[in-house]
Image (tube, rainbow, N blue to C red; front, side, top):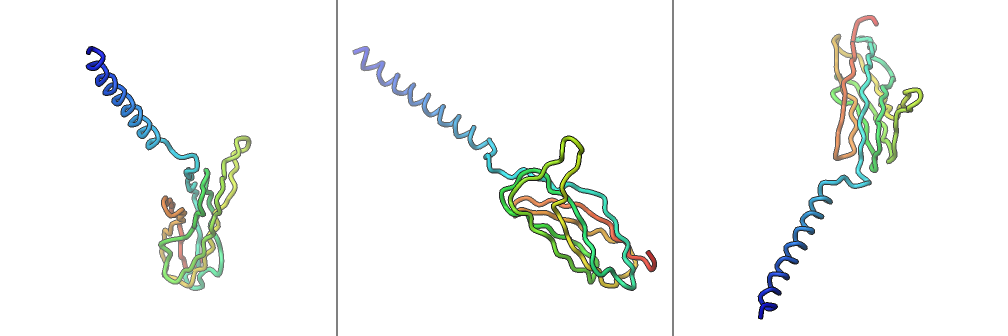
Length: 149
């Protein structure tokens, strides 16, 4: 008779332990980063350009580096351009890019080409932007439109 009363407690305790282990496993898996997750950043750098306000600038480019690892294509662009300017970014295919530990150099893998039509004198701050569709990073550059550069 004692065995009949002990059996439900043993089953109940085993069920609690199994449920606790399952909850622990679910929490551990949900808080860990998958091995294929993208871990990249757009490395900012200081870039300036002087543009003749009366002539514009027919074709130039800005550069940057995406550092880390990514599993989807990263699209690059130049946003918040002055009036009449057009740009073309460059896609970066899945891969990785890291700073060289020996000499500190980093491959420039962002190239954004831009053309400036004549524009009003002033200072403009477009942004180089990189996005993988989930994460977006950007940094400003400086365009100075002057009568004479």
